[in-house]
Image (cartoon, rainbow over all chains, first blue to last red; front, side, top):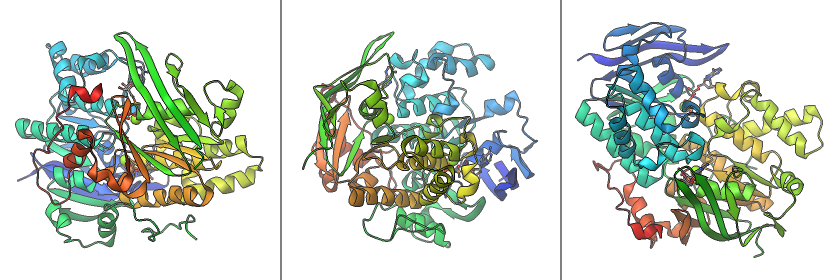
Length: 263
Length: 277
Ligand SMILES: Nc1ncnc2c1ncn2[C@@H]1O[C@H](COP(=O)(O)OP(=O)(O)OP(=O)(O)O)[C@@H](O)[C@H]1O
Ligand SMILES: Nc1ncnc2c1ncn2[C@@H]1O[C@H](COP(=O)(O)OP(=O)(O)OP(=O)(O)O)[C@@H](O)[C@H]1O
Ligand SMILES: [Mg+2]
Ligand SMILES: [Mg+2]
């Protein structure tokens, strides 16, 4: 079986800073692949690079076998691949209504039944038609995130790059959105690459995952291995411990940097 | 316990093209020098409650309250100049969309330095030193590099921590933290919480901690308010969150994906119209 998303030895450099250092992942058609790891370790950069938003300094990327070059992505690419950004405020246009932002991708790709699809997309993410003519600043954080998800789904892509898609949602809406994502993945044979810092969410959604730290993939494992504690790297183990919640007066788990907040 | 903040019957309404949106509908609570959690459904009015306390409500909205007082100052009738001087110095808020809330054309470091110098008479060199210390305290790996970066050049979690550093640098007495750790990996999350914890325990800061993360709220906060459709529907000791009475709160725990559990699809809430009455 060949990978539908294949990244080989990808490096991304900003000025002198290496954000991704020889990263490789293979994601198979219909699979949901998870990325977890330290804040600043390059998870968003990896997704952005696939989407043509961060120029690679080395390595190759392929989507359905076709090599992606530089930052150029054609219309067919965006029809097949959609991304939900970590920061929904930044990815929505501040001075356009939700309606217009959902209409735009449909118009670019010449879809006809726009009206019906917009209403369906809003309904799927639990937003009534009352939100349709609002502007992004008139929505709560979680409502904006749901608009971003609706916009990514509206073109019925085959690959979704999801960057923290539910971190702005309460558990009840999160469950609805995760169920929706699983449902469309099943119905439309979608492939997901999903970043989340919530290990409960990643293991629920993904069979396999990669753990990143400092621009590298430090461990690859299955969700079953993670749940069963079959872990090789200390960093991954720390993540598991920390995911159990806050412990007062316990020494926090440090990761190199000094912690001046403690005596 | 004398209250640092008293909120009675707070209401926030927005006129929109499809009618009035009542975002906050009569919220009352008192805050001492403690960790108060606020959880609640997306869109239930958590951020608008925080913004009203800060005086950051958009101008077209109407804010009313029987009482909204901070350390004896009636905020809604206070002169704008007094209100401005409280903001950032004595009352600070970590906003939910940090990267959007930071100034896009100013480096992270300069924003922290300027915030500090607005409120304290310190030399440029000292301000820079303190900003770098603050960035290190929030676990930024390479504070010198990040000091010089612009908001679009930092990761989601780094932007969030930059915002936290900026809000803490002036030493506020009341901190409203709106989803302050939602973009952080779990190890960094705990480090940041231990900083906030220490400010409450040692400096007597009052903390309002808005979060979707029930596991964090129940392990970190003292008390929790649960919001639904613009109102507080339940108040609990944080350690009792799992024994909540309101069906919304009860349902929340059940919806969370848990490592090792195999539940597809996840259970969802059956929302009852009477919850929103
Ligand atoms: N345009 C840019 N210029 C300079 N540095 C950048 C730029 N974009 C990203 N970086 C750096 O690349 C590193 C990786 O960032 P990235 O956003 O990929 O992290 P992340 O793993 O998604 O973190 P988080 O979990 O906090 O969102 C960070 O150190 C960031 O400062
Ligand atoms: N400018 C505005 N005009 C109209 N309605 C608004 C405006 N700003 C916010 N609202 C509405 O007010 C309600 C409360 O918003 P708020 O941001 O306080 O929610 P929240 O509880 O913080 O939600 P989340 O968890 O999703 O961030 C939402 O339904 C939102 O759509
Ligand atoms: Mg990121
Ligand atoms: Mg909010």
